[in-house]
Length: 68
Image (cartoon, rainbow, N blue to C red; front, top):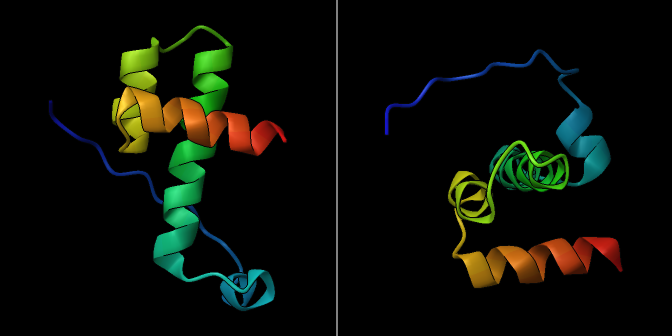
């Protein structure tokens, strides 16, 4: 699969305020986005899991954790 890169401008102190590294924040954004697209039926379970970088089982577990 080919990939595109998406860049988002954010305040420079955001990661400090969130107590996140840039990489951990990127991972969360990919997960949140894939969950939302799955909920809206724009991605299949397999597509959403792949986009988030998880197996289908791990994706389901992460999605359930986020709902708790």
